[in-house]
Image 1: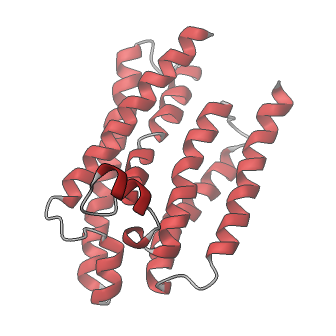
Image 2: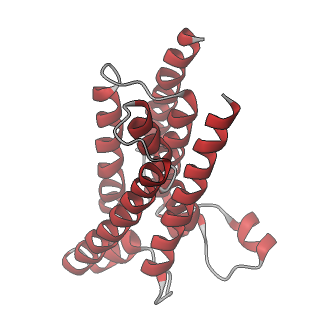
Length: 198
């Protein structure tokens, strides 16, 4: 079992590196590609650097990899151009909601946060540990929306609009933050469900 857990993050990393190299070739907009991939590289580098000091569960690594993979795809196409028409058409959406799916997966990092706090016994309270994970995601979501706004305001208008990805929705930032937060709530519930099974 430990070998499987140790192999899983390596397999996820190799999969990401292959996907990243493939999607680095001829992206729709190179400036947007850089802007979208930089935070992902920082996340991956942090997970690699901390792996020897703290190893998350396999579930945590899988959940954290969802954002990494989705964001890499979104960076190649720009989020509004990702081939996601089958979902848009099936649900009758007026916009490409691939970015909402990626934002929802941001919330999955709450699983790893709660797992770390619980394993390290940094709080005896399930409520405090759970709320920390949810509040941390909501805070990161708000900070990221501010970064998107600043980037869009100071960059080339076309690249800024592609990075912002609002697709004409004036409430895009608020909906993105809500998606992040809902993902974190689902992740925390899943964490305690997994703990209950143990």
